[in-house]
Length: 112
Image (cartoon, rainbow, N blue to C red; front, side):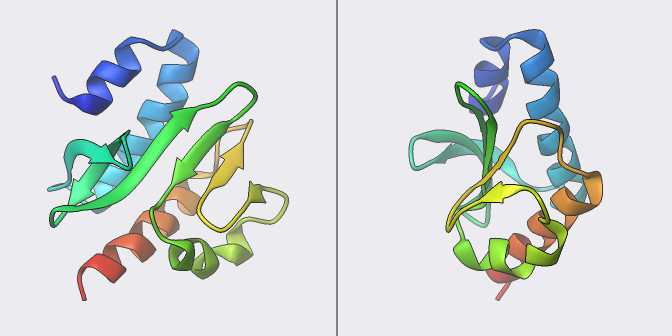
């Protein structure tokens, strides 16, 4: 098991399913991403750099792409979704296309 698997195992099954879905989509875009840590959070890592973390908070889920620029790249897809410089917060699952776009934007940064 890896850090993400360990984290998911400790969550409520419904919350774990929401988070696992985001990671599953991320792995479609970056199949060679590995489990690890980013800023102390369970994360997918790509090219020895943090790619994406998804965490449960008290009143929302947070997606952390470790890049404000990746969020800026997908702003048109975030209408009505709470976001800040380094995080996207949601209470309802994000559309799969939004997740794909975010991961693709972050991967493109790391591929430079």
